[in-house]
Length: 333
Ligand code: 2P0
Image (cartoon, rainbow, N blue to C red):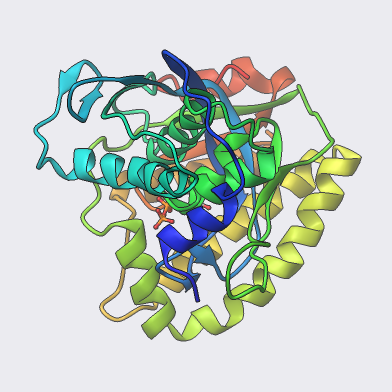
């Protein structure tokens, strides 16, 4: 089993850096249609199962990397104190690159990392996926490495599991892999587009969640009796999802995504102590979506580790969906 540093070295060794004056990269946030929940290696963030996501278009993170006198992290215009938890996480991530490239004998400048999320506060979309993906791409450009997408996705994963998928746009498939060293646990874009598929974000609460995804996953894997069935559920849902995307079968895509998300939440609720990310309003929206479907409106939902709801519908139904959910924010993809 590798440490994060050894993992980064394995990928970066042999690459000779050619440092640029400045590099900027954008990565989109993503929403999983087949969820990642549970790690087979918590140090390397290797997932138990495959997952599949779609990008959130122009919602995401732009990150700039440039040399400076000392390490500085600026988040959404605010210079962070060096001991700030986010700043520490960022510098630790940057150090994976610096240490690995140092071995390849280069100098090691201090850096300013400027990172801006354009995901509106309260959109209920996590920024760690786009954040670590944008940082990985900006570091790749800054050091002039020219890494392939697969390598970028492997490195972004060291920041956050879902960041591996945000390296790409469109439908993205994340392989769990079986290699104990994690070298086969990468993401890749799928060769299918579906412009009529729309995503709407409904914010129930913008408060930070009380249990992090990392802790929530650990608790679910360790204590939920339902988790034993989760890998099989993902396998069967994934096959349906791939069929749905290939055939542009919206009902199959929506039903599979909704079922997969609700099954993930069932697993969490069966943990000890139970893990419930929903608010009463989340439950009310689930009921409303299911009612609207009974009335003939093809609309489905998915929910991550939080109370906020993402609606799935087709472009032709957008006006009807907006009328039913006036607070919904449409994702432009
Ligand atoms: C996903 N989530 O597939 C799932 C569904 C939340 C629910 O990936 O511990 O922030 O950094 O690997 O990526 C959230 O987990 O967790 C997540 P770490 P991450 O999108």
